[in-house]
Length: 260
Image 1: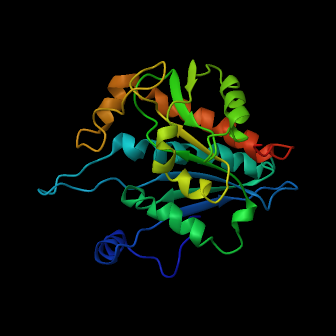
Image 2: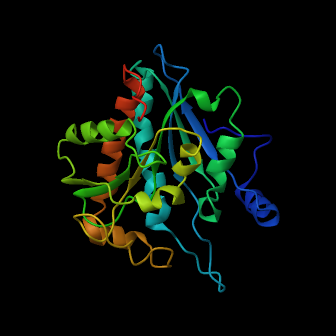
C-alpha cells in the first residue's frame, strides 16, 4: 500500500495545497524482502509531475516525460510482488513516485533529507531511476551508471548482465548522458553517496550523443509520438530490463566494490 501521512486527502485538496504552499506529494510502496538482507532496500523511482498548463489552461501531458517512466514502474509491480510472495527477493524494494521533480528534484531531495521511519540512508543498497523511457527506436537505451566522480558503480555490471538475460537484448546500451546526471531524481541520492542507475530513452543519435526529443517540455509530448516511434514496445522492453536489474540487485550475494 502507498505510504500516507496523516488523513487521506482528495486529489483536489492536494492540488490546492500544492498551489498555495508549494508542497508536493511523494507516493511510496514497499515490497518486503525475505532473505538475510531484508533490512536493505533497493529504491526504484520515477517522477509523476510535468510542467503544468499554459496561460490558456492547456495541459502539457508529458506522455514521455514522465508518464513513461511512471508507467514502467507500475507495470513492474505485479511480477515483483509475486517474487516477494514466493520468497525470491532477498532485499526489500521501495517504489517512489516523486513529486516536483520539474521544480528542482524537490520530492527526491525531501526524501533523502527526511527518510521514512525505519529506513535510514545506510539501509539503501542501490537506487534506480526511470525518466523518459518511451521514445526513439526500441533497440537502444542510455544509462548513467557512474558516481559523481564519473567512476562506474556496481550497476555497470548489473545492467549489462540484465540486458543479456532478455530474450531480445537491447542492441546498444549507450553511456552518453552523464551531462544529465544532476538533472534527474537519482542525483539527490548520488550526492549522499548512494549507487544510482539512471535509465533513459537515449538521444537523437542511435550510436550515442545528440539531442533530446524535439517535443521535450512541449504540449505535443503525447502518447501518439511513442506509438509512432516504436509501437509502444520500448516501455515494455524497459520494464523487462528493469525487472532483471532489480532482481539482480536485490539478490546479489557480494557487496558492491567501492570505486578506487
